[in-house]
Image (cartoon, rainbow over all chains, first blue to last red):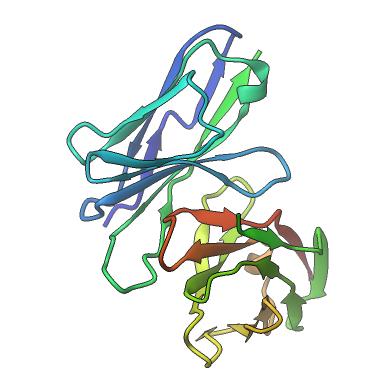
Length: 116
Length: 115
């Protein structure tokens, strides 16, 4: 079990550019989540996948944001036409989706995005 | 929507002493789960302890224990014998047992451990 990994760890971009982040969940986990965390706040939910299906999306996920999990393994989060307000830590989490259990989410180290 | 409130932005504790972090939540559901996560500086978030709402017994994990008061919608974390490595941001989180799968987080409490 190597844990949840995210790449890159840091990304600096100019306003208007597109960025893409990758998340590799714990290998046996079928659920994957994206959250956004701004300074001094707790993480806020963005979207959720069960296997390759995107089942939930937050109102925070504007049309500039898109997430995929094509084969039910890794996921990508793309932000188009970045804005300074997109600057945040983007966290990925995965869980095993065990029926009847607390379905604990395990978090990756995050990708810190800075939009200049 | 569920809300989670952590009213203590910062707390400090002497090494080896005990500290309690507060958390309240608002929900109309009867089936849910509660979590405390720890986020050390520049490190990833890790689970400290979890509580199922249907369990009356308070969860305990070594030096960490919770005081779960379902009627009061309160879920505090007690850290006993505090260690320097306990210094971190602590987040309380809520997850529905029947609806949305995502976590709702509070704003966090920054814990400082004084040697």
